[in-house]
Image 1 (spheres, one colour):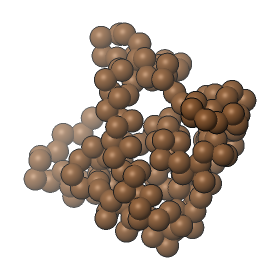
Image 2: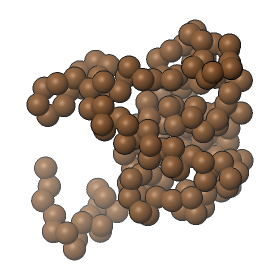
Image 3: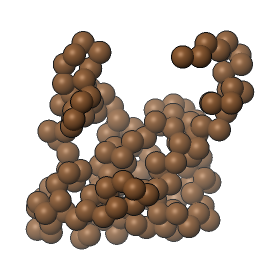
Image 4: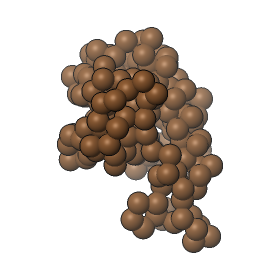
Length: 160
């Protein structure tokens, strides 16, 4: 643990290169669009880059991209501003829902009081490889690929 004064926090070597927190005001459509514009990295990898946005984890990126209809393999620089306008509030919604559910307990995550989280019971794609997509009019099976050493789950029909 490092104790840093509030006025020095943003200049601390461990914090100054972090992107904004996704529930904060600095994380918005113009910001994210400007950070992704021209990038050749897949959108999934870019959203996991803590220099772009801090605090987003693998599960929440998978779920957000599914809700936004964005394929995790799509190049960041090719995601339209209109799609980013859809994605930003979805990221916030997914995170708020996860927080309300106490997080996702897959292996060892527990809340501070020792209780398990329950967000994993509402996953649309994460960990559902080979199962039917949760979209109402879709019969495709959820696929799994590995990106940047992390599993990505998605529906090839619903996510373009």
